[in-house]
Image 1 (cartoon, rainbow, N blue to C red):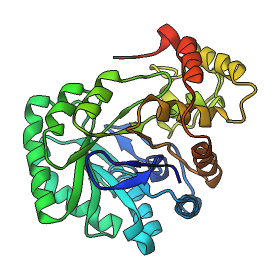
Image 2 (tube, one colour):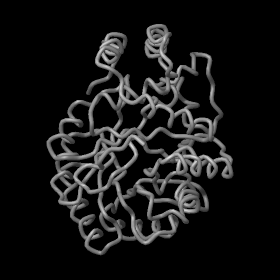
Image 3 (cartoon, rainbow, N blue to C red):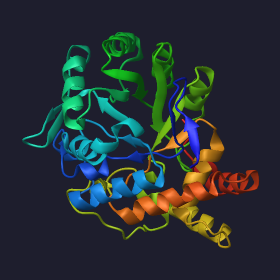
Length: 324
């Protein structure tokens, strides 16, 4: 199993984790669909068990994914193997599991202990390996108080390490000053490159945990401009906002042609690109089925792309790549 160290911690994790957003099912954030449509809980658990049997030990979820549903499913699936699993979850929003609604909070610091206790119950565990702040645009000048409260949770034994899910390098810098901060989760894929965040991870010995490694499906080669999504899938509004753009789809098609002789699928190429970008990266692709998990795991058999392959992809995406 291809492994990596989780930042400055002593935790060794599979070089790819599994993101558990999609298996949370239906929920809304400020009235808008925020899930990935309906799910089959039995298939979700089968997929998690398949990953565990294959050697995947890093799973990333959040309190708001399905308003606690993702955490509950994950806790149920790994209950008999807790000592072999690195559990990561997130906090920072007000979750109503009865109405499946999530809203923002005006009392981030005051709610941290309460939210941590709720996640511990749902995950069926007495400690969280990686507890991550989920409000990506939180004011960096106020972040030190959040960080210091997380240090108190470490002292209480409720969490082992913590991090922040943010694309803001200034905020990442603040969190990285904490003794037990070990990971910055951020967007990273072939179309969206975050060099400043990666620089913070390198400077402060942080793991780079990568959300949207497949661009919410855009980089899999399985979507086109005619692709549609159910109204309860957050991607349903892509036609109204940035998302399924012709330019990115053209890049994906050019990449398909450039790698026509490669044994890897487009998914596996996308993951290989992330591993080659830095030895700190740990992509966390989402899943709904065993088949998706299997394809993701097979990428680890190929490992990082070569320098020549990286150059080819950089040339293809060129000016269409977001680097801010």
